[in-house]
Length: 186
Image (cartoon, rainbow, N blue to C red):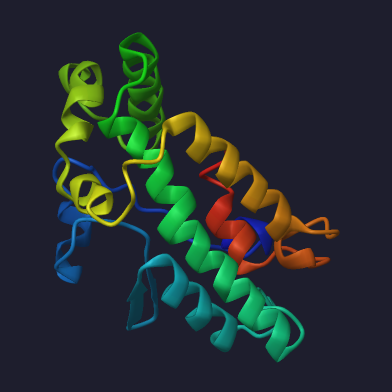
């Protein structure tokens, strides 16, 4: 996303979520991963910081130390609250029909990036519930909070993080926090 925002050339390599051979060299199964020359980084936040250091003209960490601290704090909130809450819907199905439909929508999105067999697309809502990274995420959050209360709390927190700015952290330009939140939505 950062490369699109900055209009920088890049080569996208689709990674099959069932068989991530393209990223085997990283010894992990998840993306994002970025390689520039012979250097590579993984994980969104360290990757964003690396890009900001390497290409300071991109400036996705704000114009001051205070801005940077605020952006990184919001980015952490996105990783540990907003994203985990979105995956909670994959584990706890308030409405099975909606859960299945949402799972199929996710499977279609994944399939658009990397084709997956139709049988996996149909089974995606059930399979994703058992995915190790999602199960691990659920171990990190408070599951006693009712889903409607959680959604409202996250919306309120998101608005607070937006503040008076057009971008998160009251920034006037896209930051690492915005790039982290964009694919999640609320």
